[in-house]
Structure formats: structure tokens, C-alpha cells
Length: 300
Image (tube, rainbow, N blue to C red):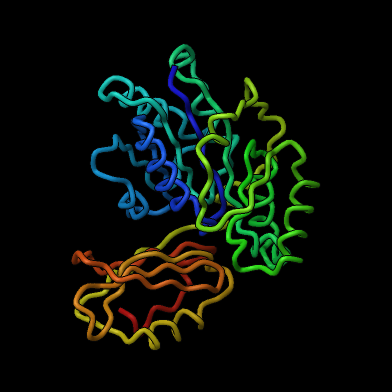
């Protein structure tokens, strides 16, 4: 039996940081992980964080859900047939309902091969405190991801005061009294907490409050930078001009005087720049509601 973990959490919460750290811990225990990674857009950005020696299946455009169950089953079947591994990690897009995603894993094809350990949800603690600023559909999905967790990471606690940290834990416990809650920074979770998980034996889809992507008008948009460099200040000025319905951006941005496009990440008003030592394609993925309306004049 191979243990299966489903990693859930809203856009920009820190799932990929958790994934890379869990992979490190598994390898230190001489366990080989395999990964199925689901992304909302057409560019497999997050999968670049997974080392080349790890079996990886990418599912683009948010298709791990009830409607994409057959595709998920085919990917799992392919992993089981073609690769040796000990643990399967499924990282869902931030716009996926975790129970719908888990439902795709419960298949008669794998019943005797896979041991579903549970849903691990990463919650952005600051976003939790500011959840009333989200649109109703997005807030519903954010809350659902938290409500169905077996293990809940209150992430980014380093951005909060001690009083705010205590409030987050208290409120999360009230909302999901069944999950173990761990306060984290950069999504770091001890492997033993995952190994101690015991998921419910089956998925009750009647308990799902639907927040389909279509109803949220949530989508992604890919921007390519051709022959253009910016200063960081110019680019951040453009970022600040975006509407609040842009939740996440990630990609590689060409900056004046810097040899390679820099890794850029954005989530809920916060930006991060990191140097990139390889020449990555200068592309940016924008994720949010009504992304087609975003004004990109002057940055393309």
C-alpha cells in the first residue's frame, strides 16, 4: 500500500513550499515520492519546483475534480505502472475543492494499492483575518478548503502579531474542530504529523458546498515579455494598479541590469523577488477573477 496525501489551499497560501519541504524529508528517510500537480493555467510553473528524479504528472487548467476524475485515474494508473515510489502527493490548484479532488483518487482500480492518509490544507493566516474582503464565491471556496482538512497549517504566522496568531488558531479551531492545527512559516510541517493522519474512509459529496471555477469567473492569463526590461519599481507600480480580484501572480520578469529574468511571486498585495541563476523564459501567469480585463499595456 502506498500512502497518498492531498495538499490543498487557496492561491498563494504556500502549498508548493510545503511540497518541496515534505519531499526533502521523505528523501531523508529514503522514501521515494511521486507527485501529481494540478495547475489552473496552461503553464506548468509550480512543477519546476519538483526535482527531476521524482516521478511527476502535470494536469493543467484545473482538471483534478469530479469532472476530471477519469484523467486523474489515468495519471495515477500510469504512475503505478511505470514508476517505483513509496508515497504519492497530489497538489491541487488553489481553485480546487479538496473533497472533489480526493473523490477522484477513490477508485476501485486502486483500492488495494493506495492508502489515502488525508487532506493537508495550507491556510494563509493573514488572508483568514481579511477573508471578508474576498468575493462571496471565493470566500466560500477558501472556507471549504479549511473545513475539510485533516491537518491544517496556519501559514505565514511570521506576518502576524502574537495576538493575531492566537486569534487565527482560535477561529480555525472553531471552524474545523476535527483538524490538528499547526502554526507555520514557509509551509514547514514535520513529516511525522503527515504520517499520523488517518483520513475518513470515503467521500460524502453531499457535504460539499459548490464553488465551481466557472461561477467564480476565476481563470489564468499568460503574459510573455518580449524585448522589454523593467526596473523593479516600474513593475511594482503596475502591480499596485491591479484590481483586488487578482489573487496570485508568478513567473519570471526581465529586470534592467539583471542578467536573467528574476523569479517574481505575488499573493494578496505582497510581492517577492528572487534571483534566478538559469535563463528562464520571461513569462508571467496571472490568476484571479476576470483576468481578461487586466490592463497590461506598457508591460508587454
